[in-house]
Amino acid sequence: MARTFLSWPVLRQLTGADRLGRGTAVRSRRTEEITARTETADRVAKSVCPYCAVGCAQKVYVKDELVIQIEGDPDSPVNRGRLCPKGSASKNLVTSPLRQTTVKYRAPYATEWTDLALDTAMDMIADRVVKARNDTWQDVDEQGRRVRRTLGIASLGGATLDNEENYLIKKLFTAMGAIQIENQARI
Image (cartoon, rainbow, N blue to C red):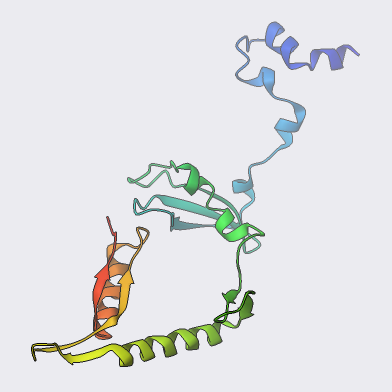
């Protein structure tokens, strides 16, 4: 009975050396038995948070080929190990049961979404890009100047794209003849 009584955190705090209750006085047996998820990881992959253009570095802890934890990378000069609330919750991007894992398609005038195979969806996108380019291609403008362009295709990049990704997108859309290309790259 006395042993159980002395195991109460308040009594350990009052009778022990940890008077402020910030250390051993408040630790339970269960707390002592717990190990961090990061200690049991098989490997750690370095990554960058996908939410904004700041580029906060992350450490992605993997066990049995599943993501078990994502934390800020303390070696990064950008975020020095810190993450905003969205970056801290980025583990849900890959582990949430609500995550979409199939391509969804709603046919014209349909009211329901259907699943498509990725290859089918990519072929549909490619066909539509080629059709839009062919249907709106201009060799010359209204004044007879050679323009070789299409106004039927445009690109609007998001803030999560970095300069290298935007460079490649610009090259791709320019090669297709698009001239309406914009992005929000900040790094």
